Every structure is written in structure tokens, then in C-alpha cells.
View 1: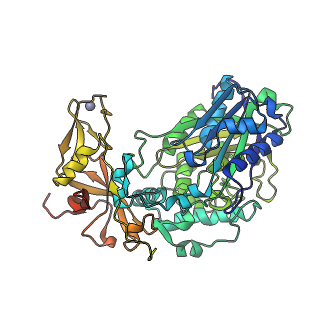
View 2: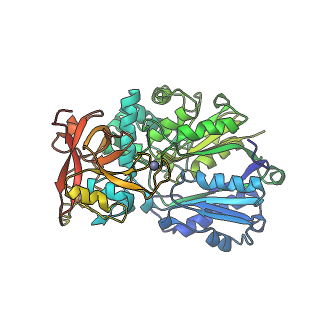
View 3: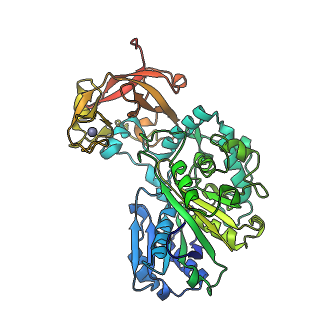
Length: 384
Length: 144
Ligand SMILES: [Zn+2]
């Protein structure tokens, strides 16, 4: 990808991530950025770019982070909100900024509060009397929330490709196997297909175990130039390529083919810009806000054919030792909904090669992807 | 939930771009904005045509026929009105006159387990409080 300067990810980190905490979202933003800065070996004053992606009710601004952490004079910063494909939105923005020379070292973070969780978070329990905007065409029908929308995407996907509920269950069961290997995961007890099928529906065919886990916490990533990365703490992980995609109609319900998603538009663009091909990828960290999204990313990225991701996962290809170890930290289904920046962090940590029992042997190329429905963003990383 | 007071179904809050839709519903018509220059149907309502950027748009009374594109049965109670009504169907209906227009609807006058993708449906109107009507779809009864 001809983006300008060669880029490296040099720092990653999380705040504590939990379902119940006394930490405010501000504390989690500061702690995640502090952890990532210390992980990189950069001094706060050497950072001259800050980016974040967040929803208004849980947003911690780039100003607040810069002032609190002594980051100092910013050459470039952006507060992104709303329509982007989750946490990777800010990471792609930061990559473009460092590549172009707008800044030299950029910290990017995503802060989430449990209230923002869409599968039973406090934020979903409101009782409006009247609703405006585009939602005036949905609220009178009891259509309020992402699990309902993805329930409709799932139903269409099942209709077009003959997918079964067990195919979605295979994602949940496999990711729980990975979570058992990750001491940071919140859900680590084994899950069987029987457990999955016995679990309650949120919006049929979408079950509770198809949903990620609402948490409070934050993740952060630091991007700088390959040149600057040479003498920092970790072996650099390089950025190869990225792409966004929305498809032709960025609207949840008017989106033309709901058996597919924005991922099917982002992924081919990324491969056009990449030095790698799908078969070069050693591990994939793909969005799992809902299990349908994981299946769609596996297909969109070319790891299997359209409609075949369910059998691909059910046959064990995404397990430890499988053809394409996927969501190796257990995913947001199990570590909590850090809204996708966790997929970037896991890709980077896999390429560093120090993940203990869940390390993918000799991982050299990794993909991270975020977003579902009309919104999608993906990146490829590698080590030399 | 059982102790919560029974709240009414949330009402639409019309604005300058959507007033026509709810006015049409009051007279039992499903109206969709249509570009008077290139014919494109515009939904959700917008002030410009997606096809040609014209602002020469006018409501078009559709024939009210459609097909279920996809649907879900919602079990989780997002709003107290549905506390004793779940599971309930939320469907996307594509219109016969332009299948690229999809309307969110419950499928009424139909057992929940009879709803299916490809089901022919027709619009009916449900009267809510304060002279508000909302379009709903039911299995098609008129010959098509
Ligand atoms: Zn037009």
C-alpha cells in the first residue's frame, strides 16, 4: 500500500476491563493510554498525535487525555464519533496521520462504558414517549437495538446460504476455548453447543451468547514511523494496508444485500492495496460484536467462500492449531466489548510472539477487522 | 416489569421532512417521497434525491403491497410497552413498486410462526393515540 511513510505499532495496552467497576471512563482512558505509552518506551512528550473513537455518552476527549498524561503540544488530533466501524476507526485515522507526516507518534484509544452495551446494558432500558429522526420509522414498531438488526441480518444470511443456528454457535463455542487460555478473559468456563442452544433468544435467531459482553474499560495503541520504531522497547509490528467500506447504502435497513455486510466492500479494497493475500494470513482478529459478523468477515476477507464460514468454523479451522486461528483472546464475547480496538491489540501481540498458551506459532501476518452491517474497517499487520 | 405502569407504544415525532408520511398514514395511505425529475424513491425521507441531487421531491401514494425481506422475533424487552407482547415480530418489508425501499413493520393479523421471508404482505393502518396512525403489514389478502 502506497500510504507515505512506513508505519509501525510500538505500544498497546488496556485499562482494567470489567463488568462492575468503580473506575470512571476517564480513568480507563488514562490508564489504557499510560499502559500503551509505557509499553512503547516513548515518553509522553514524544507523542504529538492523539485520536479516539467513541460515542458521546462515553467519550473522553483527546484534549483531556493529552492534558492529563502530559502529552503536550499536539501536531494532529481528532475526536471521532458515531458511524465508524468501532475502535479500528481511530487506528486507521492515526495510521493515515502518521503516514502522511501530520504527526510522528500517535496514541489512539477507545473507551467503553457498560451502559453502552447493546445486549442488556443500562443504556438500552429507556422508555421514550416519542421518537424523532430516522428512528421514528422504527421505535413505534419496537425496533430499537442492534441485536434486533443483526437478528434480521442473521435471518437473511440463513435464508440465502442455508446457514444454521449451530454455525453461529460454533463461533461462540470456539471463542470460549480460546478464552480459557487468556487470563484476562471474563468468561473462561467451557461452553458446549448444548449450552449455546439452550441459551435464551434476545431477538431470534440471535441469542444472548451471540452478543459481546458489556463492560467498562479501554484499550490503546501507539503508531509511529518504522524509523522511530527501531530503538523502542518491542520488535516493531508493521502496518501493511487498510480500508474502510460501507457498501452502496450506509443505512442499517436500506442496505441492499443483507446476506452480506460492509466487510464485503472493505476487504477486497484492502487486499488490492496489500503486499499479502488471504492465504498469507497466520491469524485473524475479526469483529465479534455478534457472531454473524465474525462469519461475514471470514468470508469477506477471502478465508472461505461466501456462505461457508459456518462450516469453516465448525470444522475447527479457527481453533488453536487450526488453519486460521481466529479471535485468539476469546474475542469480545469473552473479554468484553472493548469495541474492536481489542482486535488490533491482539493482532499486534500475536505478531510480537509472546502470548504463552494462546500464541500462534510463527505468526508473521495478522488481520484485524471491525464493524458490522453497513460499517467496516480492516487492517493487515506483519513482522519482518 | 409487571409493576411498571402500562406505557403506550412510542409515537413518531414528525419533522419537516417526515410530516407528509404521517399525514398520509392518517388518511390510510403509505406515501414515499419520489424524485419528480428522475423517479427515484427516497426512504428514509431526505431533502435531496440520492439519484440526481434534485430537491424536487413529492410524496407518492404507493399501492401498499410488499414482500417480507427479513424479520426477527424480539424476545428482549427494550420498552415496557412490549413487556406483555414479546416475542414480537420486527420485519423489513420491501415495496412492490420499488424493492429498494424497505419499511420497518410488525407483521399483524398473522401467527408469529407463520411469518417468512418472501411472504406477500399488504399495508393496513393501526390507530394509536392522538389521531396518529402507523402503517403495518399483514399477509396479503387482495389478489395481486
Ligand atoms: Zn432524482
